Length: 85
Image 1 (spheres, rainbow, N blue to C red):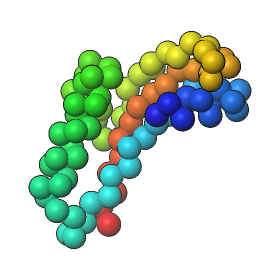
Image 2 (image 1 turned 135 degrees about the horizontal axis):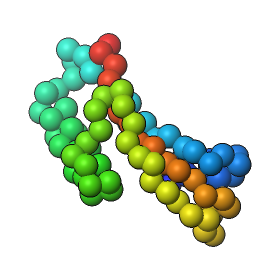
Image 3 (image 1 turned 30 degrees about the vertical axis):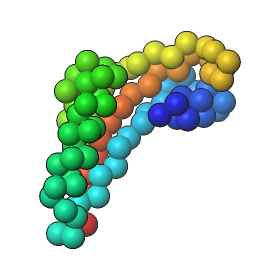
């Protein structure tokens, strides 16, 4: 996620989007999917105080001011998509 903000600033962008892309199929293991989903919920809750973002929606913005690696302010949005393959 830090790389997303750093690259956005390097490109002169004021907005960045970090998307978690989940692939799901009959071959994926439900136990691992459940564990990954719980970890993602925890990550979002710790980062933004929300349980998780809904699939296909963005949460944010989270403002990053200029710093050593971020040359201009960047507003970061987080999202999640799921692809059934």
